[in-house]
Length: 299
Image 1: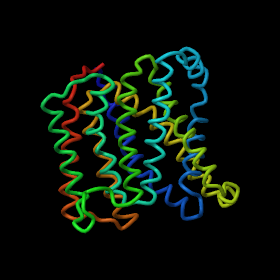
Image 2: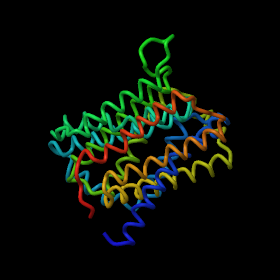
Image 3: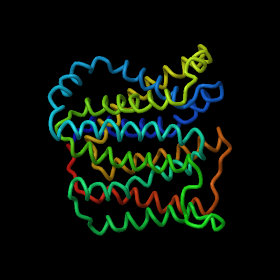
Image 4: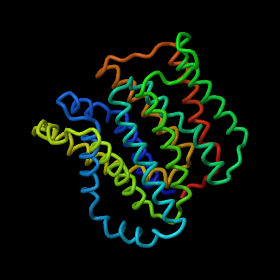
């Protein structure tokens, strides 16, 4: 791979880690002025789709080509799984402890092992069993509260974060399975899926008109910047994961944990205890090893 392509790929992954390590904060700023996570998510993703509107002819062509048979089902699965991954991530980070939610989200390698076996018939090697052991061990240590019994998520935000991580893993496996879809189209589908899932939730919650009235000029600027960042990040990350070995990409993605830890300390006064750090170490180790589950050549 050329030096220029390598630099662009690394920059794409790191930009995604930076955005997702910080994105919880502007959504919380919007929440403080009365704009719920659902409405903020819908508007920001619609703006991201608007930024990528030049891709609509290609997306429409893909939809017309692959809306029949199994190919259409894989496209729908990508829309729904990626959509909940993004929406669930925002909702969980808004109301939960940033690092605990993010670590539950980063159990994704564990679910990747399961979904790859189920959908792609990929058998476990020795690293696969180690990923399972480290992920489960890390989660148990981090979540263990003797007074609560089993080491399970302790509130709705943590459950949402866990489910978003599962959905993230599922969407990655589906993306590998949906080889018929171009990278650009997959990226747009991810934005579209998030908006499609957020709209009915927002309708069920109600009070949309009242919330819209609370969005002042500064809030619209924040939403616009979020939309632009989400659009750019979606394509930058897809470029990076397409041209880098999976284990190298995973190492770069883990910088999101560092960024989130620093931002949550300064912006939300959150700190983790020793037990949570130990659980985090095991989960990060599982993520690092997940790159060795499959051998992929650079392109």
